[in-house]
Image (cartoon, rainbow, N blue to C red; front, side, top):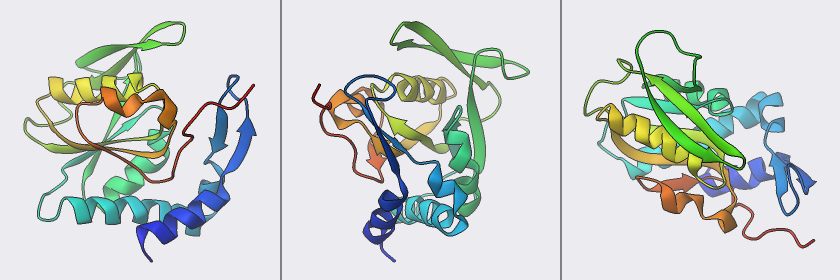
Length: 187
């Protein structure tokens, strides 16, 4: 199957919730994909195919997954790519020496951390999460990778809220598997 065929099938498994978590957002729940082992495999295979096609001849050393939904498929993707998995967690959740990045949220700031020795310098990394909206958390993960002197090949997302233009903040190109919401819902 092609990435487009996989994406069409995966998109059909999403559930939609208008005006959640706030007015103007059409929340597309991708959790039903994980209830079906065949769909979960297709999700991983889609990202694997994309990355292998785009980075032919280039080894992906690590997949970095953002807390919490990047943890749902990041480790499986890392295994499929024969790469390591490195989590980015909220402040205070990781043992040992960490580096941190602050990012803006709707009502204040939050902090992401990564273990300081988790990625050797100049490693090729891909950063994954379920969705990109404003781009704050993904950019913070990119900042962490750069603090460790990693080479960010790409950011990968299952979905995107296009109208929020979050990908414009990122330090590397991005790939979104399933087409996203291009404009806010009418009130």
